[in-house]
Image (cartoon, rainbow, N blue to C red; front, side, top):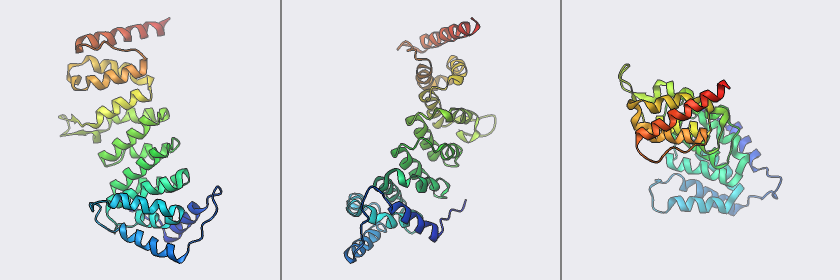
Length: 262
């Protein structure tokens, strides 16, 4: 398993930088804050299934706002806290500090725990961080299927067309298929890959997807292929049987090829 470390000094510096908000007056931490922040940290050690814990963590964190940042960072970094609580700490850090937290949160794409990698991606999506192409491209090749799916969701929802070729390459990545060589089966992520290609309007995928929709062995992907082709071309296929859809896209492909020759 890959190692993941953020030194105490770096974590401390991250806390300091995140606490510096030029738009707000610096808040002085008093004795009462120390007591309640210690209580907040202890709450993060509780079983994440405890009734009402999630709402309580959110309420207490938002009561302290910036003062809670060092606690959130500590929870994110240390494995002694339950995974679900570390996930929530990541989301709360993004909520409290907004886009200023993005560079720190993005570092967790290298975390050995898949849930923290997903949390990193989910938080960046919530912050609408479109420019972390290197992070999303790396996540598309992650060992965890769930992380790869979340990366696709980020690219799809933020319409990051610059990563369309990376998404297309996933169609040939054997980690997205199961079974022995020669008897590979598509996993559910293939549907997400195809739909993402449509959401980012990857024109280079138009012809290959048109060919796939004609083949009976890809019948289980008909809805996804149809969705993607509609997004890429702007055309609407007939809402009818499969054969009519295939004929429609074949005709559209022929028109497109003729237009290229003119």
